[in-house]
Image (cartoon, rainbow, N blue to C red; front, side, top):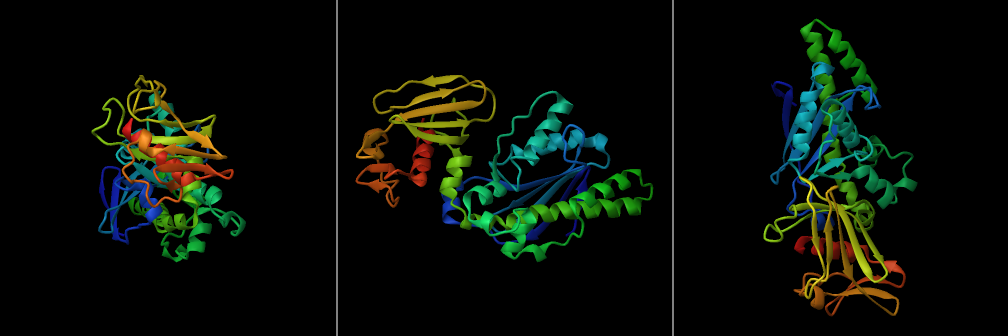
Length: 347
């Protein structure tokens, strides 16, 4: 891969195939996403700085652009963090591997230590590790669930060009900081950049693993983003994240988070809009909608509440204008998620 540089930003390009999958598109159609991975000088954000943040963006033509923010010395970390948070907030979704537990909390912690405030990161984290661990059969098949384990399972491990581990990249960086020979310094930097660029490229190559996951159930447990129409309530941000849907006591309760500045907004149920809507200053929201229960089934009358326009035709739980959310003790995750998404889009 050929690199060009502007200050601490490095970019590289290559050609790939655009990933598509009907269930994936059902949730993420029209949203932008980027694969994301960081390199640090240790595992503790309290002590070890971030030295490199890498992104991979793929356009509809399959053109992939790898963007990396790299610091020549740990003292330049502040610039990297500002650029990284800005990039994270420029896309709707970031694809990571264990990003919810490591990459994003690490960035937030380092940012708050340097700037004195926790950054508001709006991108939804599509954490492939969480999907594989909680939404697939692979936990009982593979000997491990590391990214490289999944790469081997997917048959893409040979696509890697780098020959160093994360620990070796730390050693190379520490040596490069003290190195005075520019050739040796540049060689170490390029090896670290290649290691990171391969990580984000491999993230994209293993993205098809979602085909082997129960995405509807996984998203019900781990959340999913929703893009609202610009024609609806302008007080509420366009992009929200549903974090939990809960059926209980004749209600569907939708909980989530929103990006941007804090807002306080309350809307009470009314004819044709039977939703109790609350957006709170802490960046969370809750929407409560009544549902019906009969003969052990929980359902929503779409014609009464949502002016049923046939949007749900083709769903297994759609019957004559009713959407069945629970039947015979089993939750219909796809129907619950779709109904919650529809409600969030129109409030």
